Amino acid sequence: MSMKGWWGRILRVDLTNNKVWVQEYPGEVAKKFIGGRGLAAWILWNEAKHVDPLGPDNKLVFASGPFNGLPTPSGGKMVVAAKSPLTGGYGDGNLGTMATVHLRKAGYDAIVVEGKAKKPVYLYIEDDNVSILSAEGLWGKGTFETERELKKIHGKNVGVLSIGPAGENLVRYAVVMSQEGRAAGRPGMGAVMGSKNLKAVVIKGTKEIPVADKEKLRELSQEAYNAILNSPGYPFWKRQGTMAAVEWTNENSALPTRNFSDGSFEFARSIDGYTMEGMKVKQRGCPYCNMPCGNVVLDAEGQESELDYENVALLGSNLGIGKLNEVSVLNRIADDMGMDTISLGVSISHVMEAVEKGVLKEGPAFGDFKKAKELALDIAYRRSELGNLAADGVRAMAEKLGTHDFAMHVKGLEVSGYNCFIYPAMALAYGTSSIGAHHKEAWVIAWEIGTAPIEGEHAKKVEYKITYDPEKAAKVIELQRLRGGLFEMLTACRLPWVEVGLSLDYYPKLLEAITGVKYTWDDLYKAADRVYALIRAYWVREFNGNWDRRMDYPPKRWFIEGLKSGPYKGMHLEEDKYDQLLSEYYRLRGWDERGIPKKETLKELGLEEVIPELEQVTKLE
Ligand code: PTT
Ligand code: SF4
Image (cartoon, rainbow, N blue to C red; front, side, top):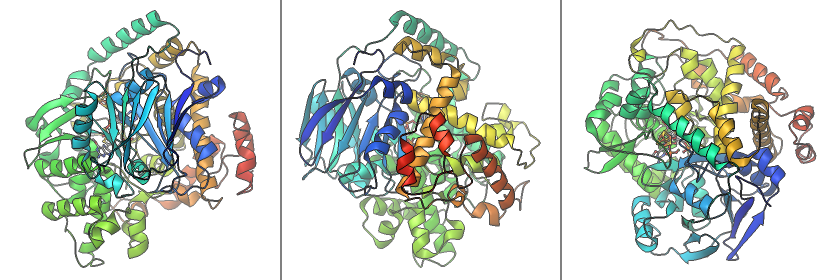
């Protein structure tokens, strides 16, 4: 296929049969699904049908997009996707890694791994040469050492993706790691990798990526990079990165505290961005990024740990732990073992609350760092009864313990760093996110509150009133189109736009310079809607049509309890009003009252081929 910007080539690997081949995919698919999440959703819809997520038939997809391997602003991201062992539905995550740069330079848009190796292996890809090599010497090692060892063998100039003991032991929220601080695949992509006995993927690419208009790309990129450096938000971003959100959520009663039972934490100051600034020893970032936000500190055990807001909120205030150097130990363990910090934090906090309420006899109490650390390691190795239980995540725990009233998850994915007792739009964003309760697709809370975590700005007192205006549903969709759609398909980091206000207009222009294809905003929104509908169809099919709007509900706690402290004490969401907002969301998306895309909608989005398969499991409107 002669195309610019895309190779039109997917590297296929079958570990059961030790087979490697290249699949060419149609240009029409590239144009329709663009890359990253779009390509992954298309592959999983077609190939991962009713598979056991941890069985050999599941497909593990590493998908790049047209922006990768080229000098595009913060364009060093990669999507890792598979059917999720945590939720049973579509799962993916996004990380910044040199592996995405090398993958594209090696001549592929994506890798799809299927089957299961008899013994631990890793993949070594050098352009057209692909080998499946023994990883027996690496099995059991943490992700930091694994990457270092592989770089000793293959040189520093490679991209490495690996799993740690958590992935090997099939912890249901194990992630894929890279570069000692980048993680992807909250819904258990690391466990899928472990189930295939695949310890790592090492890539070295040396080819030139075909680009439609090199000069235009260079010009536009240079302009965008300069705009980032000159933006007013840049200096504060460089200082605190995502950590600025600790103070902001705390002030706005949204900081997850003690298993989301409250929205502000008495020790917030000692785990916030300012405290982090005082501990910072270096800053790391993703490829092609000129606004690096990986803030590295030394933890209580003297080791390096790279902090982000989510890590600190869920492993700090949410566990009642108020010392940043201790939180950093938990964060480093999660990275090294290869577990999602968010789901790990919420699983541990669920145990803590169960202990507090007497449901569990033993286990860490809120604030007990030592026991929390022990439990984190037990989870990674599945080595105690409690560790084994918590390794399956909150939904499974709640089913065993009957603790649904404080089970903080949507569709089985644990809630990330925003407590929503008073934020209906953000609750809707969690309810309708395509992987479960993750904020990445619609971080609508900043719009809902009316401030963002910007220096000076955060201190401003805003008048806030809980409302359920239908425009909240429209806003969630607008953000999902951009964040969950555009950026995940390109695949580029969204933070230049979100955090320092880089104009969105750069993105279609860059995409055109790279691919030669002109996309209007309508085309891009339609592509995003197509991906959302396809992912929803995937869930419905994998759930055999047993689907209803309750799947899009946020955790019960936000309806039945109130905030424990602060100016909004006692307030919570109202179920009937949330339900109306959800109906508005479905109406705007062209989905029926159960949350299933209507036939007409699927046709409009060019997804006719999905209809017959969906009709095998449920009646479509
Ligand atoms: C993402 C989720 C997030 S969202 C965070 S912090 W965040 C947690 N990070 C983890 C971590 O670290 N280690 C770990 N063991 N588990 C972790 N789980 C959590 O995973 C990350 C940045 C951040 S920091 C964010 S918001 C943005 N996310 C992007 C995204 O999703 N898409 C995109 N196109 N651009 C993005 N840019 C930003 O990337 P998941 P990273 Mg991550 C250590 O993985 O599964 O998508 O969940 O990618 O390279 O680490 O960069 O306050
Ligand atoms: Fe990576 Fe942060 Fe840069 Fe985004 S802003 S590309 S997350 S370093």
